[in-house]
Length: 410
Ligand code: HEM
Image (cartoon, rainbow, N blue to C red; front, side):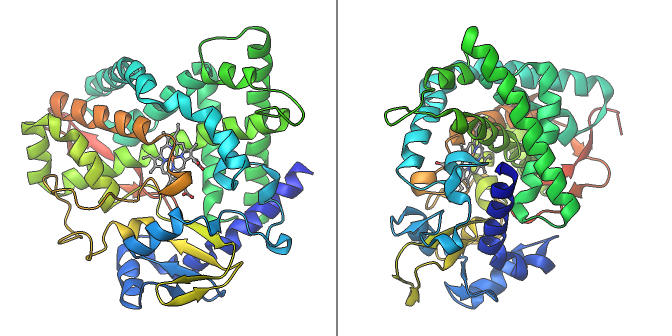
């Protein structure tokens, strides 16, 4: 049943995303010209499947913050399984379930907790860079950008390092499905990964029931109960663990990879960071605006809504192209230029907005800032040295492989 629900859920997503996908097929390598073509057609552009897509910063912000839109269609015919709570937990739920579940996870990402993780992040970055520097040439993704977030979120959740590699594989399979499922084989792979991931977390939950530790899964286990007043049911804890794990590393890896590519593309920008490593956090924000990891999300109208001169009908999806909003010329001057010294205009929407605003935004910022700062301090002569390979997906974007060299290691 769970598989059946998940299959329906993905089908729902494909319909929701759809839209954008039809438009974006030709933009896989470089979606930005496609976004500009859409922008030229107006703030709300109809898609072939009868939905709408927007590149506008203002319209996207309005949709994401409006209570008249949700992530689950109200009409059951359009909402086979999203309401079941399967898979990606509260990311795919509307209030009140969203509110109840998000409240359980949010304290782990509070400013106080972030301060307590800083030393751990710093130590992990240091160890990864020491190992990489010893080799002279390395892959910025495989040797830094990927292991850092997996290691950090695994530690927070209480997953052993030994299990983290398997979780990384399963998580990557799940993230690949955010673009929709391409074939029956892909569907089977995604389902297999979902089952294996949940089985791993089920084992961890059982261990923490009898032997709680100082980690996030132990905190969630304490909230478990059945019936009306319970904060978290047995069926909800595993999807929540999956969400935190997958959201925690399939995104941050791309932020670090894309930031390094952006800085290396223009040697003046990399030199500016090397001269003043405290610019690392500005580099992270500019990357989030200019080439963010999550390119789109979508909301469905829960009632007829007047938006940008158009009536969005109940049940219609609006695809919000988060990556396009970062280049909206009504908000950012010279938007296609990556500039570390940019005076921040409006807040970018790379972490979304409204009630689904990314729970892990501060953690992602912390990891990426420490990674960039340490790269600039320890490897001032870092250079891209080989063919960069990009992810083939359109929802989650970033490099898969960035060969780099330092010192005489060319
Ligand atoms: C939600 C982006 C890192 C956990 C979101 C959303 C976006 C996003 C765009 C909202 C999607 C929507 O509105 O439909 C990113 C980016 C990241 C990042 C770009 C890295 C650069 C993280 C990390 C974690 C995390 C490190 C946790 C460890 C979550 C969770 C949600 C979420 C749990 C669901 C929030 C909700 O539905 O209320 N993220 N994220 N994210 N993110 Fe992140």
